[in-house]
Image 1: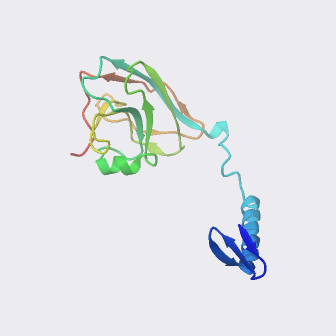
Image 2: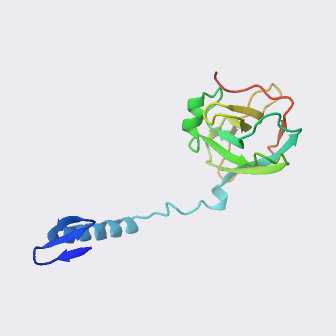
Image 3: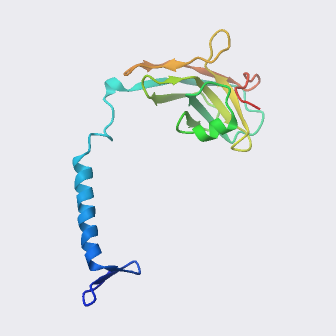
Length: 180
């Protein structure tokens, strides 16, 4: 930053700015900083442990994948199935929460999601991407009831739902929740 006091201008990033604007800008930035610091209400503070809700369990793999596995993940979805490709792509990290697993090692593993209390999650499953990132997905396993319907979860503040286990059988895929 170069200052030219004879002409009352400041050269900043190649632009000439009148010195009076610079003083006003400095005061504005200072006031903005003071207001933003004084108005903080612990917005970034973590929730107390008594308010955190979690869903967790294990994933057991039976057999080996018969084709390409580019991405292997467990997904927790707020919208109910069936899912369109647009829903999946636009919902990543807003209504569909992926938890990446190793795409090359099919060893039993565990997962855990910290979820927003009092929100209903309609689908929890292990998904595989085998080609195009936007269109080539399949479900390998999902949490379901005795009638083969997806189980929904609504957790209260502080509730911890553990033991939600999934078994991936590469030789017998479940029905797919995607709109073709």
